[in-house]
Image (cartoon, rainbow, N blue to C red):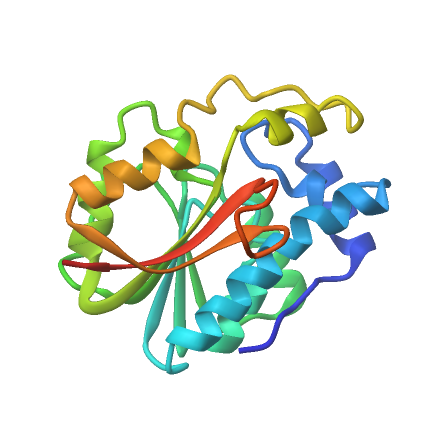
Amino acid sequence: MKYVKPDLELMRRVAGEHSDNEDIALDVYCSENVLFREFFWFRLWMLTRMIRRLSDGRGTCLDFGGGSGVFMPTLATGFERVQLIDLNADQARELKDALSVDNVTIVSADIVDHDFGEGKFDAIVAADVLEHFQDLQFPLDRLKRWLADDGYLFTSLPTENIFYRGLRIPFRKQKPADHYHTARHVEKRLRDSGFRKVMGWYHPLFVPLFPLFRISAWQKT
């Protein structure tokens, strides 16, 4: 699995063309502020490294809530087939076409209305997605249904701790209105819903020292 960072100018063009889509955050990956930009890219590098450790590089992967498409090119190098689902996948679709990624299928749909079927995916990636669901139970039930019995769910979740909140000040960012849950709460709900953590790192230092994101791998119990 190859860690892929699409061309910066390409991402800026795509982000600019869809700047009215406030629910998609491709802009943070092509920010003029290099430190801010690389801060978010490093999170995806950590996810890539974790997937490499646990995945055999075959089978199918779901990019759950991957509407920006930023992780799609990386996932496409690590799995035979990738599906991406989001309510709004315009940016992902444009990146897919620009990069000629041919093993990715993009689905623009609400998970309430779309069901992939039981045990469909060998891996599911939910990178900074689950905290946006006010009611977590339905998406967690969907993830459990869609994941194969021996598959892995990979999550990235913002801690929303004092260090995370403090970084919003120098980077002039406000907490999104739909950040309903902390990483700790989402991980507790994952355990309550029949998942067990098999690997866990902390961004940016891998250990829980000033953790800003929790990067974790899960399997069904």
